[in-house]
Image 1: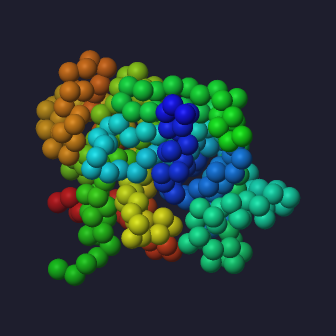
Image 2: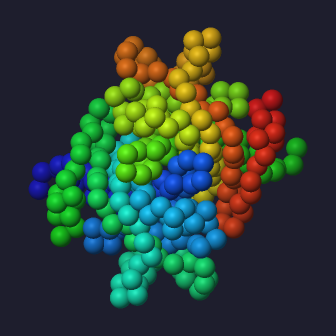
Amino acid sequence: MSKSWQQDILTVLDSTHIAFLSSQGKTGPETSMTPFAVYEDSILLHLSELAKHTKNIKQHPEVGLMICTPETKDISPLALPRLSLQGNIHKISALDANVAKDTYLAKLPDAEPLFSFSDFSIYQMKVHHVHWVGGFGKARKVSIETWRTLFC
Amino acid sequence: MSKSWQQDILTVLDSTHIAFLSSQGKTGPETSMTPFAVYEDSILLHLSELAKHTKNIKQHPEVGLMICTPETKDISPLALPRLSLQGNIHKISALDANVAKDTYLAKLPDAEPLFSFSDFSIYQMKVHHVHWVGGFGKARKVSIETWRTLFC
């Protein structure tokens, strides 16, 4: 199969365990780091009720999320392939919670002890807009239909 | 000198070339990746007028910025030391532009060719609030006075 930007998106999603969440705070947008996993065509985050970003998203569930190739010495920091997602985030439904937990822990086994903390829950970000930057000057919008086909 | 969280903040600032900017978009907050440098107690970004985040910050100069230790196999992704900054961002004054350019290029020499592009300018984020996460469960607010003393 020839290498394509669709494959490059999947490579970025596999390259890192962390994402950068933009949530709406009282005085402006705020960035926080949060580990993530992909579940179907959505993104799972495991968030504490005590964290500021969780309070923010309860007020404003529209969020941004960036998933970026980790820095290495082999690639200029200006050219790191990355995804910028926009969407809505909500606590996952009870119906999906067990599968989501297994999916999350398959990527992030270190998080297992946090599932015994009552303030943590899995949140699901449903993705509405996808912007892909494959390198310097290589940016493109990805339709939501194309995004979904990546996970079929 | 004993190791302290103040030193840990400086270590994080030195550990990475990239930051994650939250800017206010039309439908909600958006995250973008942008290389950064520290200039006195402010943060420098080199942004293109063509980029969405630049259009966003012209409308809403209140931004969030996260600077996070890069992922490695040696540390859990849940525990990466990181800084979350809030502040206002504006194009740097002509008075400071040359020193800012030298400071930026000392950290990011790969960006030198971009200074010949007319759509790029240096923006300066003046930091108003600092939140430090030194690891899992190690979070603290840093006063702006303490932040400033880090760069004296």
